[in-house]
Length: 85
Image (cartoon, rainbow, N blue to C red; front, side, top):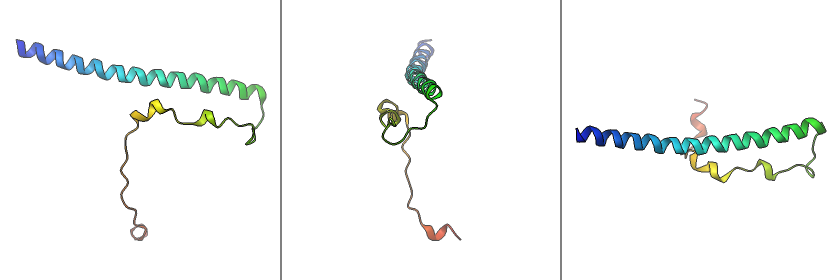
């Protein structure tokens, strides 16, 4: 009986912890969608193409909060000789 209770408690705590991470991710996504929708409204109203002097480069930077959820990809050495074989 105690083992079942402990197992249930452990599993529910793991599920709760995984949900909080997903909630943070969903909140970040919703905020970014709102920001992008506001930009699109502005672009639709102005209907102009921006040159390099007028473009907002700060808005296209990567959000540092989202970097923790990106998996690390290990790259093997690329041997171009074997590509054409």
